[in-house]
Image 1 (cartoon, helix red, strand yellow):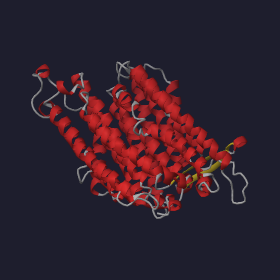
Image 2: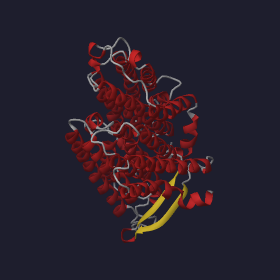
Image 3: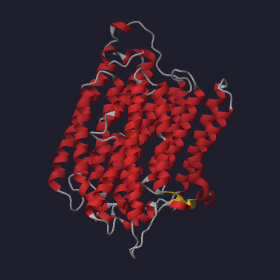
Length: 514
């Protein structure tokens, strides 16, 4: 089994969704049940492959790339098909393979209008290939192809199946991401032309492995800062960091529930992963100079996102602004440039994916039952749909960082890491960031408890008094129970992720002296 996984495991996990999408294209549109089965079987097959990779992964060597392949691809520019996973990419790969089948299960009887399960599920599978491919790619051009592959499916998912302002939101999402990607590819090309080997000969490679060994040696300081800035723009817009965040609330608010879940759970992590996997290991000197500014934008995002939440009247838009705040904690951990901070950031990525994904699932179900997400029109969810009301309470507590649930381990260590940033960074500045970020957790408790009190407690508003509200469907139980269980398991035993990430993170930050 291990020999087979070493040769084809990551390739199978990456391209199986495309195979399923092609099969679905050949099937008649009218046979909706068959499309659902094919999509679920395909995503389940990907999950099975990833479980096999997890079972055969050498956890004593998490810093080493495993299950790798290195084959010729575009020889004229020396771009190769290089894939592999280590302790940094493994949790995010597992998160992707875990979330997509649950989204498809939820979709079983929750397809948005216009009703077209065939097209909707094909786009979901194409998205999965892009997300998985991004986390396993070890070549910059290969990474870029997968990074961009997710753009069109999500554009159509928002633009076709979204809300009333879907066209505005989808175009805004596309333009922001495309602009960031343009700067990012220029940065990648600059690395290709400027990277030099020990003898001074040009490397002319897109291999992340070789470029991480080079670490910007011999590169002029200003040039390194500019190249890092290009990557910062591409990854920062995807996160999204303040002030590049404005596309996110619109995209989340207008997207169908499934699109919001995938966007929150996985797509935002492509940006933070890019910082950890590419920008910092390849240009550590530039990363050290950029770090205080990244930290500053991170804490502004934490406070701004929280205040934005308090100003919202739409439940889904509030959850979207909470993502801006929570991803700020992730970026603060990364900005410390310490193994402790980056470990916290990766944990925060996984925790945010599970918790905010759950919040969007619940918001979508509330919208389906009440036909509104306007907070002032809602109330009494615990009376009319008690199971859903309690799950909203659980998810809100997890999101505000209650100890014992996964959200705590994404926020608290990131705040703590800011107390002692990497050598060369101003301790006093980062300790100010730590205090500001800690205040952000108070605001988070405020807006989440306010949301819970308005939506779940009290009695139904006059508009919905006496209306029968169906509590939960079977597909809701099947899709949500694994996420709830994992939020609890990671909250009680965070070492489940930390022991995977630590070795690879330490290896990644060696050039920074920490």
